Image 1 (cartoon, one colour):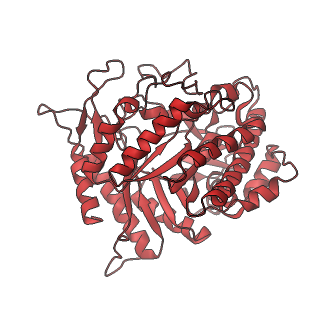
Image 2 (cartoon, rainbow, N blue to C red; image 1 turned 90 degrees about the vertical axis):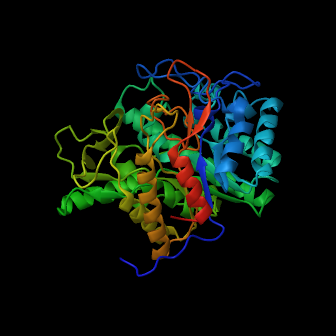
Image 3 (tube, rainbow, N blue to C red; image 1 turned 60 degrees about the horizontal axis):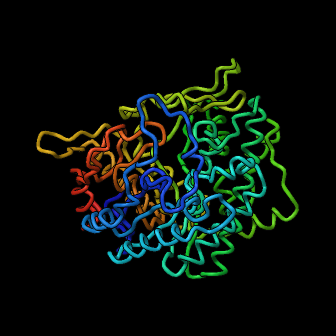
Length: 472
């Protein structure tokens, strides 16, 4: 639909950007922090760094937050490292970690920036992983305890909370993201394990939503999955059916549970048919029904296309040139390329209109306010001879997505914030520090830390202007 005049962004719209603890903080073994599953990794893609120093935000957070304020950020979305708060996941509380996040939040508030806190962003405590991770029901209780420590410590300062970052990708891409027990032999065992993990995460999420509302009724909380509408590769009815299948498995399984407290019926039948259905304990249904999110946060980078399964044993295909990330499942759907979309230099399709489609679809299904917690372009940013970074390609990417977000708002979608990935350069989960997303350049290479100097990119000045004008 085309409009004669677009609705403006709300006057209190939360413009900002995002990071996660393990990708930006560094100081992996300082301040009493325990090892996470990220720290326990022993293999990295050849030529890429680890996460031990990252962007050294742990030591430079005051400088970084001052830069965010200079750019005009209204909000900053970051995650808290579980192992800084409780080093083994469920034992003694680490007071030094508690104080670090008090100091960080105080610094954010000092600059009149609204903190948005993610409680869990991939970095499960390694001690819990060694006991079975999220497959072990004890991790549910450990997470609830951890979340309540956060609420008690920071609940008077933080009004926006996110439960679990990209839970759906931890299930769909469990091997790539380290959430799967490597000793499981068969694919069926792996999937069964992952969907039991998924159920436990959902129970934990619902419980902590209730706890926050009980303790701080003025605060707001929501899930933060990665959501992207799935297109059929053609108008062939079987391709459309495959798109329905994957939308249910990839998207609505997670949001139906978060927003409605129930399993998506098609996703449940898929799990039953494949033998992946989780064990549901007495009381779980009541807990799941009691979790009421105040909003839906979601990460959006691109859409995907699928076609009907061919039944040839080759339905699983590599996505975006990344051998670690695959899509497709025998008898369910097959990954397909979208010939109408350009791609990044990493092979990821770029679909700004898909962003509007996704915003519309989530709003129509749930009628809950929406917060975009990640959206961005990874690229090999380089300093030029003048010591500057001309990332006009990032400006183009973000501008087209912001335009589509405003169109979605004009469509009637309620959106209250936008925190693209990422506030400053950090370590990408699979491509090290060479794949950069930040508005602010961090002067380091994969294995040469250099001076870690912060240099705002061309996109930083552009985004600062967008914030100042409350839109493009």
